[in-house]
Amino acid sequence: MAEKLAIVGGDRIVPEDFIKPWPYLTEDDREAVQAVLATERITEQQRIQAEGLAQEWAKYMGVKYCIPVNSGTAALHMCVAGVGIEPGDEVIIPAFTFWATAAAVLHHNAIPVFVDIDPNTYCIDPDLIEAKITERTRAILPVHIHGMPAEMNRILEIAQRHDLSVIEDVAQAHGAQYHGRLCGSFGDAAAYSTQASKTLSSGCQGGLFTTDDELIHQRAGLLQYFGEIVVPGQERESQEYNAYGLGWMYRGDMFSQALIRSQLKRLDQNNMLRVENCRFLTQHLSQIPGLETPLVPEECNPVYYNYVIGFDPKALGLNISAGELRQKVQATLRAEGVPTGQWQRLPVPSQEIFQNRIGYGKGCPWQCTNSTVEYNLNDYPCATDFIASHCYVFDVNPPNDQGLMSLYVEAFHKVMDNLDLVLDAELN
Ligand SMILES: Cc1ncc(COP(=O)(O)O)c(C=O)c1O
Image (cartoon, rainbow, N blue to C red):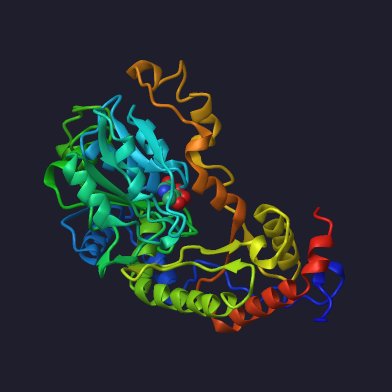
């Protein structure tokens, strides 16, 4: 028998304080932020940092326009407004994502329509999209979830056939590639989050909007600044104080932008190190019966925002649910010092706001646009199964390296070799 499990008093495999946090900051990152503070005319930095980041991200993505903003959700809302979505229009999105993807649609008085996910990539299933298209559909909004590219060729082809816009949610996939091309460069517009945990991290909140289209850029720019036209850096002198439409205040802040600009220089390198860590995990964990490691289609180069692991009790001859096996193994792994966890606990359409059509009151936007869209829980079996049977292994980010990944593998072996004890353990 293997050594004693930590959950029953044995030594843990991953020592305390061994794991390095994300984002991983260098002296250059610190100096970049300090340089903003060190300037005498600090308000000028707002324009300088925003313009610098806009140019650098547009160049990285190979697109014409970028607007740095204060969250990924704001950037998504700008995409929705940018492509010309109007009240009551329907936007097709995956049933498994962070619900901000759907919130950005509701923010514009439009209606999210959910499609189940592909059981292999966990991105929207292109085979199920057309059944959800109605005369009100205006856009498809795929999410490159966990850093895995959605099947863009199929999605673009469906969109073209039905004359729909495509908005990409790249909140979790900076630098991921599909057929050798960057996620975010396929659709009409794209939104990226730079929230603390993301692969391009501000350490706090932030987002980026991109497009190649001048009109989409103009509309998004208006929405971002109170619906007004302003020349950055000349807010007082040239501002008309004339709102051309409803707008919000979505500008990003200069300190986090300075940090992102510095981190952007290492984005590809950090992605490469994370990918190496995750490939190492897959190589070793795929040998353990009962575990399912991520499947990577040939045309995809994911960046593994999260490392996803699945549980298959049938492969072990166990007559328990995948959810029960997952919870017990997770609890035992955590005791061994392996940070595992879940993220979304419900498919988005199963959340209260959709089940009770709460929206922003009086049943709107559904009620006030005469929407007949329904959110039936049985329509999303793959999203529901995915949530029950999978969890994430966290802290696969650099500077953690194969030293830590080897300990993760060792802990998985220890736990899976002691399954009888693991299944007997009381969950607290
Ligand atoms: C898939 C997805 N979409 C959108 C968002 C929203 O980004 P933010 O938190 O920056 O508003 C997130 C981030 O948490 C996300 O994971």
